[in-house]
Length: 434
Image: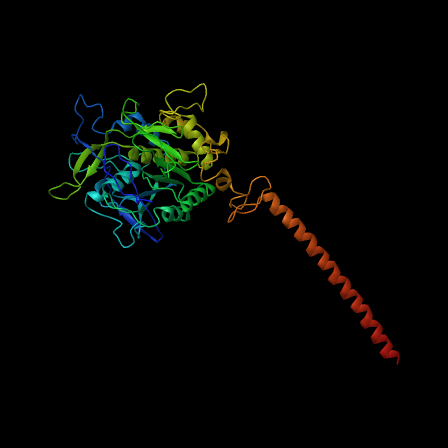
């Protein structure tokens, strides 16, 4: 298998890897995106600038009105990405925790101040950015400013990612209590990764992944191809997907991702003062993860499956005749945070509508759903595959049989004790008489 690498491009996708280590708290200030970006004025949008200086998503998602109701508080979003610069102005004072270990390249830095940290920095800012900016330049405004972000570094942009990819990072995110995992990355398939993503879903975590920037999804495109994962395409201010684009029956939805305000280090000074417009499915993925955090903070009693239901049933600006209608170009439609927020997800079925039952879908439904203990189950009384837990029916039968055996043994022991007592009593009586 060819080891994945971070790739810089317009509408970028990212490639990463992982391992385990403790987290350290960072009071941070972040920046924003990567990819081939188009320079733009940072202070104020020109009258003919449809991107509004890269902040068009603020109006499109009605963030002022939304944040008056919910801000992502008490929801944890894990980000698996390149090194991050936690000291940029856009991340100052945010609830950002960065892993102590580079999961893809053990011993390599987890933070950075050069351009190799630009992708991850922008992903974090897309979620919790303060919008503070620098001098007269407005900053990146996060969609879920009060969410908690757990950050797992898995390599560096432009560097080959060796090792266990980001499988271990997924495991750490689960252990650390993530509610949503944002993965603006692309790696090859590994069985351990399939099981890690199944474990995440069994634990009630929503998985969000960036699709490729064009073409279609293939079984080699992980984690995007994984069963049950929310897959995201990037759209612009007109709710349109600009070419190059991806068409796929596995596409979930389109979210703001084109011409968004992003920050980079200045080539001359190295200071993170260079604001530009960035585009890509990576941005759209982080935006979607943040939108889920906001809606979930408003409806804390909803399950992960119900939050996915709310996401796909409330796209666009108007109710649809068929809430679950989709097509290969835009999935279920364009992300609508106001409609998600207004809906009550607890009224939706507690099942993930994105889980596929086709033969090549991995992880399988059985792996994802598991039994009551959270472990994978066998199917229809068949003998479970190696490493797979028996079905609940088989477990119940085993427990019942075991209980019967134990009961028989107990009765037999009691009978023996009673008989022995009688014999001893007779012996004692006979001795007394003698």
